Length: 111
Image 1 (cartoon, one colour):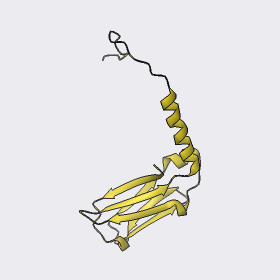
Image 2: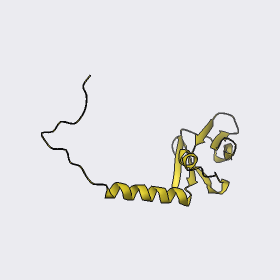
Image 3: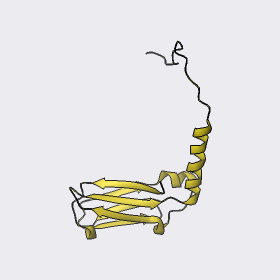
Image 4: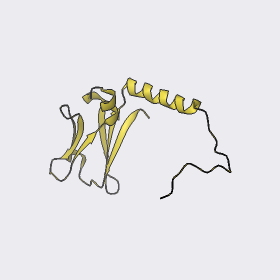
């Protein structure tokens, strides 16, 4: 996936009620409503681990009003994160498989 994505469900208010911004000091995405009925802070742990800046231009959001209403917040992954994910995937695919013999019990200690 090219985006980090979060979904906030059961938000029935019209789209102009919502405000989705970035708090640069706390390094978080903030979702709030103008009627003060909803407030949420979202951390982007992958960006914190990679020590990458949070950019306003990478943030987008939409509101799906069908049903109870879902607010979908997307943040475009930076190239460094995409590269790291690709390397991890390749490492998983090239890792040797170690089958467990049928008569060999797994190393699980019983309590």
